[in-house]
Length: 184
Image (cartoon, rainbow, N blue to C red):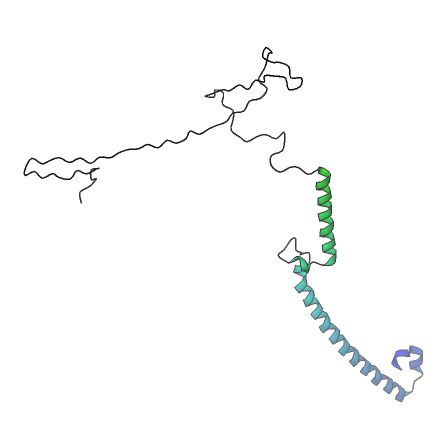
């Protein structure tokens, strides 16, 4: 009855019906109060859960220590697209060989202006036609220097201990190979 009651319908009720109506309204208010308390408790639990999860928002396997298996599907798709875009960009640029690239500055030793030995490599014949080049004017087209370290030669030192007869009683004191630095 309280759900479908209007102000005009209440005016026409007698005293007994008004008492019943008031009791039903009070019971309904009590039920709504209990429901409201339960809803507030559920809301408090949800707010606490959100506060626990808030620090994790935005974290994934790329920017934290989380394993990649914990990434959601959207994050995995984003990472796959980023990897594909990077691979496409690398392929478009062309694969470069390992090591120093041509045209870059070298880091080797500088050429010596006065090397100890110079060996000229002059061609005898033209590499194209095979003609004789003994009378042709030539010029240095490239230089390179090789630095060879000398082979270490062993130095052999022989140490000889000498003995001499003493003046008295023919006793020869031992001769030390090197003198003592300090008395014992």
